[in-house]
Length: 235
Image (cartoon, rainbow, N blue to C red):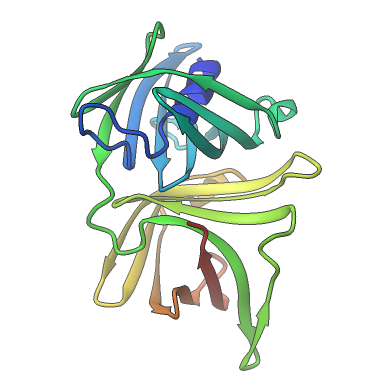
């Protein structure tokens, strides 16, 4: 199952067949050891992530993702993180997909992914890297080119953040779910959180603004503490 989820993520990138775009969010439903799991995939321009979590409890199972390239109908991904098989980090895998308007399949594989959205209506769709924060009124910047990254990928309705290190192949944590952007307000509805299952079901609201292409994000974090973050678009 996880092999298919990983392969699917590699193929989903911005490639399209018959005029259909892969940008957005997709979902497959699977069963493992009698437990129903969701496999939610978020695809932005050039980056993607696939995550398995318990459909009822939100307990996190695994995640993987990376960058991509397209050659005809062959999709290739260079893996940046993979919690099930970290040895794949830095490797490249290629394959083909079958795409219809509302479904995605991998050639000769059984899973079917249904479209959740097409990259709309959320105003923050894309891949973003954590680039700094404001403390005591001063901006502290972070080098986004270093191996240790915190990336957030959003479709039109789904979000996920992932903290990882491409040099050491370490996975630090992840969380995700649904989001909305209305009147300068960004709201997260958490469906899974790898470090603390108790946060599943929580709703967090923040003010947001795009300044010179960067996403400025402020409010109270999940612990109730003030925060001001800056994210740079990775595309």
